[in-house]
Image (cartoon, rainbow, N blue to C red):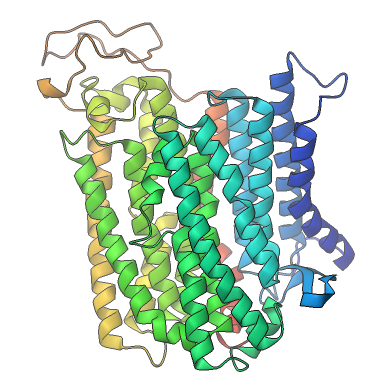
Length: 554
């Protein structure tokens, strides 16, 4: 069933447009604005160009989704297959199915919302032209990663996003941005070098780099030893990008230093490239090797779940001087642990849960980073002790809509039933209860129990954050001293008060602005929609996952 019947040639064009248009937009952003489109100044013109280009890509992606045959989500659609490098049998092979389509939509949506947000709130840094061009190159690389069906093209797209993100952190980031940017690029490049070796091994041993042909062969053309080596090499590169504990240490620094839109894109879409590679490449192409490493992957995943939660609890406690952006970054380590656990089960239930958790994490954590960025703009800091002690009423009293939305995002992140975060975690735990044939049930049920314990820890630190930031603390030691930077309020600086005494009136912060509501509302609405109607996503992924795990047979 298609909502609108669109011809195959138009679908091919739309997918090619979605991948290539951001690159063309990036080139156009660096050129002078045409007469009549300059607006009030050149900076406004290029920012408006960014909104227009990302908006056009989002519209094309939505039309692509509308024309997608939802009765056959396991079939590759909108395919283009053109020979590119005949000597290596490298082809420009594009296509989408029920696994990649939701990720394309998520990427296009988040990039558009970031461009819209930046139009009104551009991060401090060099030329806006360079900023818009880098965001568009980043979007093109991410979309290409989810659309290409050739291993070497996948690697090129996978690497394409590194340089734009490096410069977004290094030039538009906050404190310690240079060190964080170098750490990001070094970790991911080293992982990519190893991944390339694994990709070349598969291509040389099987005689093709075509991902569809390799998935259909289902590893029958590769010996078990080759599969094990390929899983180890490719999996290492993907694990760095995911990130999997203990290869995660670049992530908190990168998130803490990145500008708001950089954090949103990093958490919302770049991390998904790693987990997508596990599902699209390793599960179908090297199943025997994956079966060998699945228990180890699950073990690292549950350690990451608990480690990320404990790190968040340590940052959230009073007096720890924890950074709220850093806390959300560590929470991503835990959430992506659930995704890896679902993949490690090698079952339709677990893999569907992993894919659902991927999308839920992109929506919820993207919203959280938007909110934390807005709070930092208003208070001048993301330090939890300062945020909690700035006033007795905190966000609920000073910016009630902002506080309510932060509380909503936090409870969505902890997996409250009825919101998107719940289904992914539940399905991955169900998958771990009954893993694929050949995997140890006692081991995976132990992993399930540890993962379930991690959900309790997640609830603990998220509720602590809500209590401290939204409700505030009345303890004298947590108040801002007269020498501290006064928070931005709607009516001027906050009047001084005696230590421990509640002000007679609670000064108001600027609450949610119109442009902020426009950027955040779609994420909140989709979080509710996916939570109340999970079939809208599972109906796409399940047939594709079933076919993938069956070796290309529907």
